[in-house]
Image 1: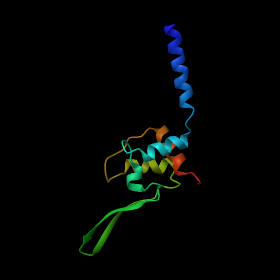
Image 2: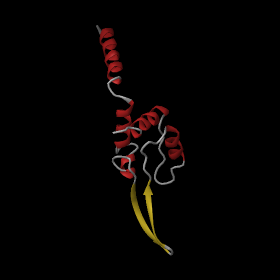
Image 3: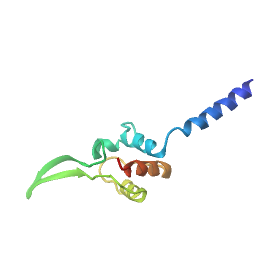
Image 4: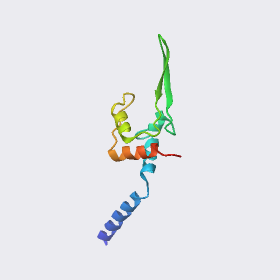
Length: 107
């Protein structure tokens, strides 16, 4: 009986994984405040947004988080590697592919 319960649990776990598409997983990763928090800087729809500004001797400068719409997996990897504003993010290739799937949506 115990073995049957374990088998059923494993089957349900495997079945549950197939209910979410890579695009949906990418959107979850993009919006999750507890992990990557992409939306906090890049906007709800990945449109990019100004983060703040400061005065210099030559005038005002604005820090802008770039738009990420239609960003490829390689560009995401490069951006994460060279991300010099805020904490580094360590995402798996699967997570980067999911983010790219969502960022390349055409809706």
